[in-house]
Length: 446
Image (tube, rainbow, N blue to C red; front, side, top):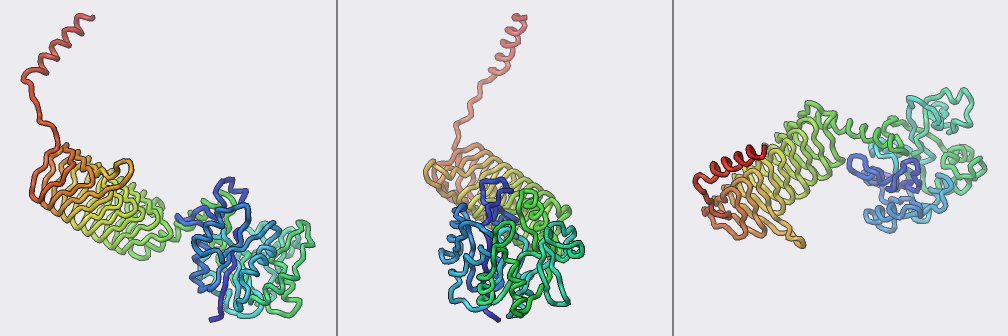
């Protein structure tokens, strides 16, 4: 395979987003749009990836450096066109010989399999086009058989060209030497005074280099420039995820109400009820059940486990086979072994729950002392009575019991009963006498 590199353009200011968050860092499927573009480049086998950023968005630069390192950065300053942006990456690709693909940090749905056909020819310039439902202001691809004759901007097109529906996505590939040679000859002799990447097609044809187009779906090449378009991209992403999981044997009665992240994993035979949200890092084994209005993020759910309704699994939650986490239960950084249960109204944070242990309603793992987190260990077969507070660090031994309403501050041995509450005091007849007195006072007041 010819060596490959990618230039990802991410220097736009994104003013139409009207958000303090830089445009390319807005998420689709719980992942920054820019990361989707980097993912695609990596999946294509690009040995060099350069992201072109602007000085106006230090957050974008920091994001790229954290993932790819300082060597992946090229700066466009000032921003004067897409051709100028690509030239800004030339120094970062010094010495590279191979195919260079140019993509965009605000095109989150474009995957490696959409881009791969662009590399079919190792010479000349190849662009990705699409058939537009409404061509509008898109640049048109003028084809002569298999040859790309021109890319014509809508405002400069004749009526005949405007009638075309084959449009330019902006994604382009060419051998590195040819690409930068052509870009060096692009001028800014236009109304905006900018250097346009699309001008390389005409320059390539003028010197006899092949120019071609390959096609992708309109949805795949959709760019995001406003919050409304971000919502459309999210909806398209979710549609693909839902169709993928349904095809893989996941049962969803109302798939349109279930939301997935880019890395969600769900095994065949799992049932997902309506209105479930999967944040990043959720892994669900086959034949589990996720009930309505649950939120799962950074958590693992084993075969036969049941979550919800109205449950929240936070990062580090690890549910073994047959575990039940019921309504209004929150689990964070806790391993629950096979067959254990927390069916109602509990908070389990930082600890372990042994096999077949039962956590009663209203139980709290008191894991934070205001400065540090501490762990709670509940042994196999233990029974924690309702409305108990286990003050970490603390261990409840195997087969032990904690009486309802207890505050447990010391370890409980295996098979022991712990009661951490005051003795019950009863005063015979006190309530009846009190009520009679109060009724009399009320009647006298009238």
